[in-house]
Structures are given as C-alpha cells and as structure tokens.
Image 1 (cartoon, rainbow, N blue to C red):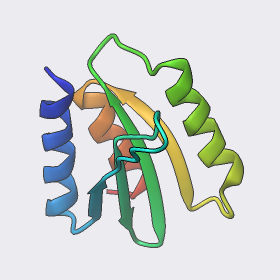
Image 2 (cartoon, rainbow, N blue to C red; image 1 turned 180 degrees about the vertical axis):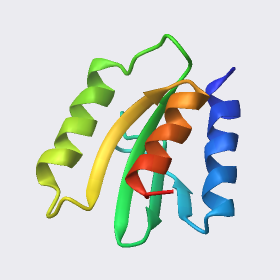
Image 3 (cartoon, rainbow, N blue to C red; image 1 turned 120 degrees about the horizontal axis):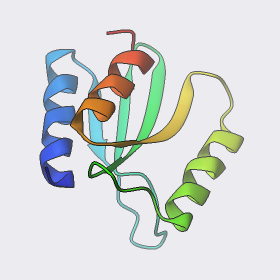
Amino acid sequence: MTEAQIERQVVELCRVHQLLTYKFTSPAHRGVPDRIIIGGGKVLFLELKQMGKQPTALQMREIDRINSHSACDEVKATWAAGVTDALAVVRKVFDL
C-alpha cells in the first residue's frame, strides 16, 4: 500500500469522526509531517510511511522538534507505518 493510499484512509476516518485534517507542506522547511489532524481540543502531526519503512533522520528531527515545543499534552507529533498503525494512532489520540 502506498503512502497516498494510507493517507486517503486516514482522511476518511477523520471525515467520519468530524476531525479536521490538513495536508502539511512547507516548501521552505523540509521534513514536516504529512498531516495535521485537529479535533476535541487535540492536535496530531502525523508522518505516514509504507509498512516496513521508517521516517528519515530529518523527519524524526522535526517530529521531536514539534513535541519539544508543544505547549501542552494535547499536541502530539508522531509517525505510523502502514494503514493499520496509522488508523490506530488516530483512534488512540482522539479516543475514537
């Protein structure tokens, strides 16, 4: 399954549960997570990978950077490999 296919399933889950989801791109700043998901007073920055793949060092640095600058426990940055893991992360963070 491609990252785009994983992303479509994550977006569909978010839509069903009325979570806001945005594609996160930053032309001047590489390595940012793929998606920002917002709902219920929580924010999730989520990097999506194909099953068996891992984020690059730059992507991990950005995930760590977001987490270290978070003002509260309701903001989280992480990554997920494969659709099962990605959907599980969203369900866990947003108590679905």
